[in-house]
Image (cartoon, rainbow, N blue to C red):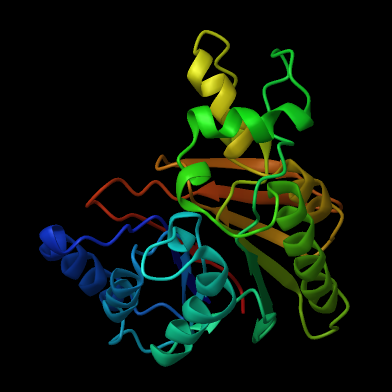
Length: 267
């Protein structure tokens, strides 16, 4: 089984030729499953057009949102998250992974946006989790453009609860031999190096991932692969899991230069 994961497309009409070429490349790979791991396009009309790039890819197409996808525009962030993004995903033939655990043969697929809970904050800074709600508006544009009523940590807990339920259902399914986890926010420390010489990065680090989810995922013995986006750089590591090493990758899309991770699994 071949699963192709891409993230951080940030679809822009001015660079359409590059996106069309990438979509053609994806089609040529003939994957058994395509997953978009967030930040497809903003505002909603560009989110839709980003999905439409892959209308000729004839396999299950799965989707999670990224932080930019819920930036307020014609609709507020709450309405986007609860109604418009899932609806557009369905209309364009994608499965919204926040609502579903998918089994393809013996492979289970589980995904979530995985909002940050400040568990990735820099240990060398003298700030606790409570400080980062105030710091965010100084260093991170999510504070300007995400206007839903929930705090970061409340949203992270809510998403984690649903994700854990879906993940457990796959772990308990005797037909599932291995599980692929896809998140927008990276969940393992390998992806977020320490840069104590950079004050801005040190502050931003709190909003770049969710290590609490990583601790959760490690406990599930069938998880063999994790793919994340959000960082706009590529990486690949082996991470210790409950009973096996986990193949952890970050998709390294750059602006106007989409990239993908291609997983080849027994299926």
